[in-house]
Picture 1 (cartoon, each protein chain N blue to C red):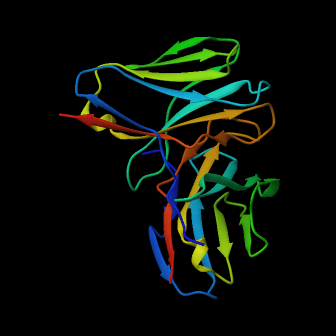
Picture 2 (tube, rainbow over the protein chains, first blue to last red; picture 1 turned 90 degrees about the horizontal axis):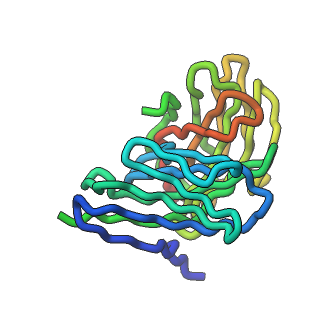
Length: 111
Length: 113
C-alpha cells in the first residue's frame, strides 16, 4: 500500500513569543516523563524531565507541567528563538519498562 | 553533543543485503538501546542491552539482531533487507539498567533500494 507520512501536529509561533507544546499520555501508571527535541537530521536531544510526584519543573527557558488527573504533559518554551524550531517528543515510562514516545509536535518559529 | 556516537551516518544498499550499524555509548553508560524511526511509525524501540546482555526487546524483526561487546559498544545487524527497512536508526545509552533518561546518538540513515 501507499506509505503515508506521519501526520505531526504543528505549532507556529512568532520569535520572542512563548510556546506551549502539549502531550497526552495513556498509562496512568507512568511515573517518569521526558521531553526530547529533534532537529532535522539529528537525534533526539534531552530537554527536561519530571517525575510523577511533581507537577512542575523548570529549566533554562523551559518549563514542564504535569497534570496526572487528566494525564497531560506540557512543555513551555519562553521567548522562543529560531533555534527552537524542531520536532518535540514527549516520552513516558513506568518502572523497569521502556520509554514510550509520543508522535511529536513540529514547532516552527516565525521571524 | 550527547556523547553517543554512531557510524556510518548514511548507508545505501540493495534489497536482500545485510548491513551492520555501530554505536558507542557515552562514557560510563552500561545500557544501549536501539530505535527505528520511520516516516509512518515514529520512534520505535527495538532492543536494549545492558553490560553485554540483552535485557529488553521491542518491535524488532527476526531479520534484525544486535549485540553489545565487552567494551560496551553495540552493533545492530539488519539482514535480508527490504524497502520498508529504510529509516533512521538511533542508538541511545543510559547509565544503568533502569535509568530512564536516555541520550541519543546522531543516527544512521539507511536507504534500501
